[in-house]
Length: 117
Image (tube, rainbow, N blue to C red; front, side):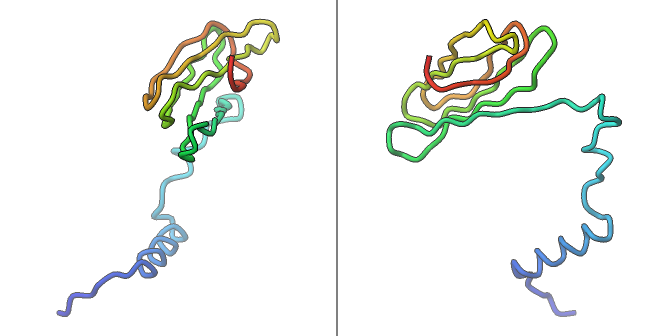
């Protein structure tokens, strides 16, 4: 039997065919049971001001009492964002250190982030 080399086009074609035949990821595994179970995940991106073209990325899923904001700062400098709650009143500054990732928990339901503090 002769060994055959897979090309990028062959792999892509095999993936398409496998997905069409149902061999791909199950849609039930990624879809919530009902629309009531769905949670809105939101994000925010800041372009670094150091000219590298890198980004600082933020994401969160609004919670009922607390919301955890996750960040991944690829910039060579600290990045500040203002965290706004959905009540429209409270804001808090989140400072991310250069080239770090992590998370911070906020009391309340986070509505949006804006650049700088």
